[in-house]
Image (cartoon, rainbow, N blue to C red):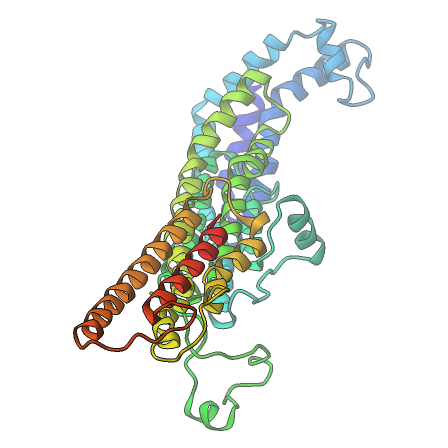
Length: 440
């Protein structure tokens, strides 16, 4: 079989210049992939098909209906699998097979496919930078977008595009098994590229929006075609300054991390197994794939933690402490105004944690479990400390004022038997009680 059939075929395929160029030329990735798969299947089935055909002739046409009866045929031990296996092994171990395999320029094929993926991702990233997270960058079909939204849960189209790109690497008309490790590493790189873009833009190193030209700034128009400017323009900005944007993107990252560890691992394993491996081999394959893809998912968790425990905490803390500037105004309300003693907390106290409550309500179902409540506790502790410091500073000032008035023997202004300082302290107490309830 080897010397009489395969070697002449391989020699002919490699000797003829026209045939060689048509089969092995890596110029068009899809053609190279189709040629490789066809010849790989041909070579893998060569021994079995030839031996079964020969036996079919000797047995009076037992397999005259084709190769659909191969499994049943082998089970009857008419032609043991071991015999076919030995013949196939001789074909694979022949020097001509090794020479034939070297003719495939598989590294070039991978570079072509990876280049296509990078082009798609770069285009999506650039459009997102210009138009913001509302940009519609998904280049697949509407049905595919709906499928990913339903099965994976993505909402932002950049993540839809990324997941579709890395999933396409394992399509039957793309993947070549000898390049499995390269394709896995390629997927890790694509995810890393996206995570790096998100991290740097969240920190403000990469700005969203576009620099406005002089004509656009003056007249509100741009010197580019209207078709190119069909999206709302916006001056450069950092989306990391919006807690809503940060939380939304962090949630998409959480979904991406989970999908890589689960759905994507299954996609890769199904593409590689092709129903040809047993349960033990399938488990080993899944373990190896999970370990490699773990490098991609491990890049995501730190960004999510930073988004919640650093960026969102700072943004919401700044909003919550803003009303504390009104603490100083409490003294003005009772300083020589003859106002009656307070019975209600100051109006500003109810606004202190309003930004936190509104944000928490909006993202109740989109807060990663890994984040927990630590971010919220940090905000409450920081705001409480700043509130306490503001009150302490005010009380110190009031105490000095009262001492000065007492030294000058200032007449006490009676209003319900309380001094201005006492009324102020009562107000601060009412405010404290209300603030404590809000914290709880």
